[in-house]
Image (cartoon, rainbow, N blue to C red; front, side):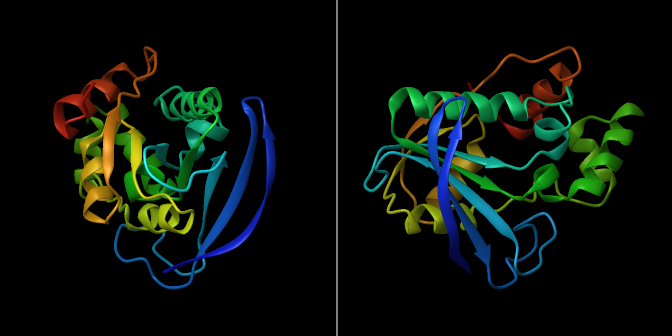
Length: 203
């Protein structure tokens, strides 16, 4: 389902990572990516030797609005930066970055969901109102990327129990859950509260 396509060093404010680009060669299935088509690209940011177990890992879904445009409606950019900083501090780890915008519904639908939220829906209700599940993401691609990198077990930086279960079901042991909360804003506090209340996000 995936193939390693290219890689190069990537200097960042957190230190130098190895950027590995993966391409899907076949349809990933409903909800597997933002658009569900072939020839999509996902990446891994790797620091140090990540072969073996207990690798500090973040599985992160794309957020164009937060990470590129600086939206304050979510904490995605802060979570990504925090993960890179923690890995750099440890000197070993990987961020798997998946194209799964808007919990798998795509950028255009995510912006439609934003409007519904402005009209009074919460983030879960908005997805449901558009005809989607609350969370359509799949972690099979992440598991495949981790296996290709030689990772046999992870210490997962997440607040989402579905990520833990999804990786384990895909054959990647999660030895430790490491809490990954970051500071919210007045624009994201309701969104974060809903993720705790309705999606079961944990501390």
